[in-house]
Amino acid sequence: MNNILNQIKNCGIIPVIKIDNADDAVPLCKALADGGLNAAEITFRTEAAEEAIKRVSAELPEVLLGAGTVLNIETAKKAVSAGAKFIVSPGTNPEVVRYCTENGIAIIPGVCTPTDIEQGLAFGLTTLKFFPAEAAGGLKMLKAMSAPYTMVSFMPTGGIDEKNLAEYLSFKPVIACGGSWMCTAELIEGKNWAEITRLSREAAEIRNKIR
Image 1: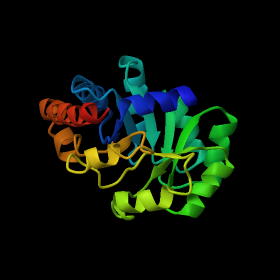
Image 2: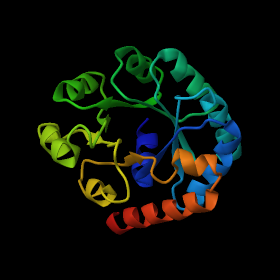
Image 3: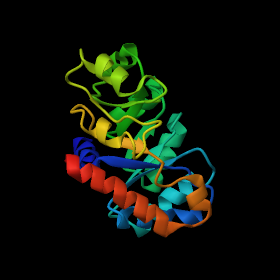
């Protein structure tokens, strides 16, 4: 688990992907990687998610691949079986967290209150997803909320884009930021891989200046 978390930290930016057509998964992740973002979180918000993870895992093993919007154990099992290396959830579901920790699966559950953080700590987790980041108060909220929990790292997600990315990444407890501005539904539907690569390169340049 720690190895995966270190890889996430090295990536710094985790593109959050909603795939409607599994055929788009590999070219999309290749476009992200060509721009310097060698990671992806494919969300289980569509029926294509499982097949998309399978294809990317098989064809682009160099991409650190996670599964998002994992709301139950069944989905966690499907994600890992398909090739996901880590699990992300919008909240902290005790059943899902327990299943993952007991089976050595890296999981980053969502939190937005001190109580959520302490629930994560009770499971032995010290890397948590701050979600929905901007709607929940943004970096100001994260700084205030995280102050008592110096042992915890965060992956803020929700409302992060090229305008506030640097500010979030500059905050030491942030190991990575999740976002979808470089791979919007419009860009994916239009198969505009070149633009996705360009936006990914811009994001990677922001990351590289800080790290």
